[in-house]
Amino acid sequence: MSRRALAGTGALALAIAALVPAVALGGASTASTHSVVLKSTRFHPGTMTINRGDSVQWLWRDGTDHNVTFHSFHSKTKETGSYTIRFTHSGAFSYRCTIHESEGMRGKIIVH
Image (cartoon, rainbow, N blue to C red; front, side, top):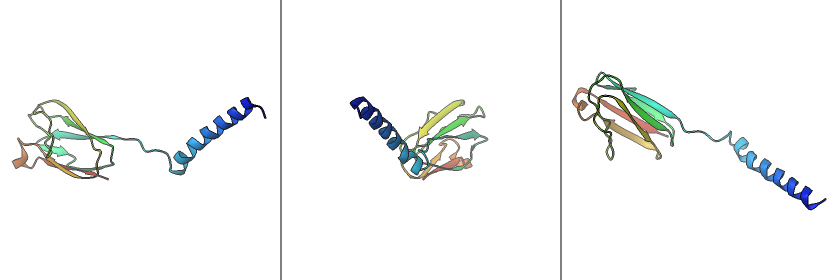
């Protein structure tokens, strides 16, 4: 067999080998973005379960000042717009709107 034929066979073997782990594992999972709506002094949904690597986007929908505040990070207080966080660690992450917390505006993201 010529060197050119061996090189072509080797390249084909490498390409097939690269596909085997993805097929054996059912393919790589892709990260998703999930939405939480801020409306009527509530987060909708109040609790959300996601996978590690997924993002959550909070969407302001009632024209009232709100914020999204976690232990170590927070959004700006605003009436409209969105705020997105990508969750790279597993765990349960509680958050709140500091303006409306006394009215029950709290939420939780559970990351598997």
